[in-house]
Structures are given as structure tokens and as C-alpha cells.
Amino acid sequence: MDKPIAAIELGSKKLKLVVGYEIDGKVYVLYTLVKPYGHAIEAGVFTDPNRVSQTINSVREFTDPSAKLKLNITDVALCLPPYGLGIYQTRQVTTVVTEDSKISNLDIKNIYALIRNSAYPLNDKALVDVIPESFTLDHGRIFARPPMGESSSTLTVSAKVQTLPKDLVDNYQNVLTNGGMIPRRNVIASLAATELISSMEGMPTSFILVDIGSNVTTVSFVGNNALYGSTYFNWGGDNITEKIIECFNINEADAEKYKIMYGIDNREMNFKAPICTTDDGSGQEVSHYNNELNEIIKGELDIFVKNLNEAVDNIVGIHDKAYRSFPMLLIGGGAQLNGLVSYITPKVLSETVEVVTAKSLGARNPTFFNCLGMLLTQAKYINLNDEAHPRVGQVTRNPSK
Image 1 (cartoon, rainbow, N blue to C red):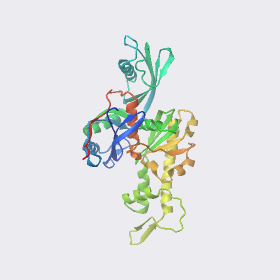
Image 2 (cartoon, rainbow, N blue to C red):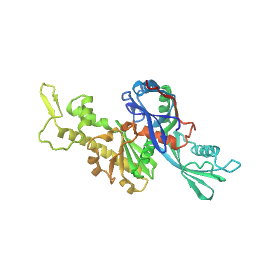
Image 3 (tube, one colour):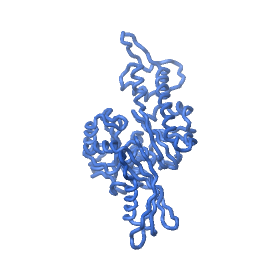
Image 4 (cartoon, rainbow, N blue to C red):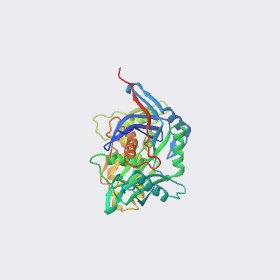
């Protein structure tokens, strides 16, 4: 087993942390943590970076007596949103330098250096990751992973280079650093999710990935388990909550509770009981029923579907339009809404719509989906910036008494 990896994602309103490791393509979780900091990030822009950094600092050293676990987190894999994502194809060739002409770590370093150099100048973009698709040796031998120890005079790598706006990358890294953690590797959220889905049995290899967050929805196009593009729009689960608050005149906690409890509920009841009763401001009680909640949620979902279809057209438009019928996979907290799949399925072009949930013990909450995928990404691909794995400084379990 390799050293445990700490993976962190900074959502719009909360920090998500997963500590774990990968064995044989499966994720094993040691610890998970969610720490709210309020609405401090707006579509990748930090509105209160200090509050986020303070939250990060508060979880650097963590003791959980119930789990008999102590964490001392120094450096992490950092999840970056795919806002402004650029993906470029490259193919580089290097001569094998060892005397016996066998592929070594030095050859892998050399080919990655060529890929890094080929990506410049990036201007206002930052090189985030390199995802190799194939390693080719003499006589046309092709490998999916680095062919260490294989004999060849040359090494050719075909890879996808991923870039993001430099300001976005710098801002996320600075917030993490100010919180006392070092970002040893950056992983794009859509790539992480794709890697986790690819590790699951029975999943399609080509699909439209929709990550519904609290305030932003990300839409990505995946073909043969490779990420080809992502876009996003400002709509999330909070849009439904805010509409319920407005229409029912209730507080946020109650609105969120009714949204989660009922969702779109089309059950026919023998009696009509109100969901809640409020005051209209003049002392008169007003009862709100299930059919009202259904209409509120459907109205917001119609806005969601309109934006979703436009986003799919945007990222698939440069490819074959037939790809718009690929299966649609939903992830994120917003995807858990009751009745969501049955309502949007006839309104999108995808043949099927399905909610995907993680199977890893200890991290089945949908909020950890991207963090779990980051653990797989770190184990599968060479770190562009630092070959050392992001690690937890010390993980110990207190002995049982």
C-alpha cells in the first residue's frame, strides 16, 4: 500500500476532504470531513478567501477520538473546477538514454519535460495536467501505462494536455497555501469524476457528465473514458431552495428540509395534508400543499433543463452531433433530488439519464465524489509537477484500550 493521499475540494460553501489510498483500481477511505464556511466562492471566484483559508487551517491537524484517528495534513491533491478548461492533443518522441535501451524513470521524465515545453507559451493559461493515452515503443508496441523495463530505442507518448485560466489556478493555490497546506498536485474535477466512473462496473464508456452543485452545474463530454471538454452555468440546488423560501415565506432550513423530504412527489393521497403552514403577515394562516411544491420545483428544473441543453450543445457541437444522445450521468448533491431523473429525461436528448453514486465505504455521500476520483487519478497518472505523491504527514490510530 502506498502512503495515504489527502484530497481536498473547495466547494461554493464548504470544504470537502477525503484521506485514503488506491489498491487495484479501487479506493479505500481512511477518513472524510466536510467543513462549511458559508457562500465564499462564486463560480471559481473567491468572495471571501480569508474565511476559506481559515477553514483549511482548522483541519490541518485533526483528532477524532471516536475513530481513534489523528491526522496531520501537510500537502494535498487540490481539486480545481473546470471553468475555462482547455484540452489539447500532443504527441512527443524521445530517445531512450539507458545503455541497455530499457525504459527507465529518466525516460519518463524526459518525455514529460518535452510535453511541458511543447505547451508554452500559454499566455493567460496554466498547464494543469498531462493525461497520457498511449506509450509506443519500437515495432509498434503500444502500452496504456509507462512501459518500465521494456526494451526500445525510442519512446513516443500521445497525451491530452489540460489547461485552466492562470488566475483561477493561482487563486485556488494561494488560498490553500494561506491555510497552511501545500498543493502537490492539481486535479480537474471533471477528470476526477470521470476516473471514478470509469472504475465502476456496468458504466458506459462514453457519456455526458452533469455535476449539480449548490450554485453551479458543470457539464462535461466524455468519450471512451477520456475527458474532451467541460462547460458550466450558474444554477444549482440552492436555486430551488431560494424559490421555496420566496413562495412559502419560510426560512432556509425549512425550505431545504422540504426540498429534500419531498422533491417532486406525484403520489396520489387519500387525504390532502399541508406541507407547512405560514402567516401571511396579517395574522391569517396560509397552508402550502404538495402540488404547490411540485410546481415550484418543476419551474426551476425547466430553467435547469434549458441551460443544460445549451451546455450540451456547446461542448458537443464541435464533435458529431449524434454524441448528444450519449447517456447522461448525474453526480453532485443536487442530483439527489427526488423525481429529478423522471422529470428531465424526456426533456433532454440523451437516451438515458442516471444518477451515479460512489460505492466506497465511508464516502458514499455524493459530496465526496470528486475527491474519491482524485485518489484514483493520483495513483494512475504521473504527477506533472512533483513525482512524490501528495501525502498525509502522519496518520495514526490510537490503540484500543
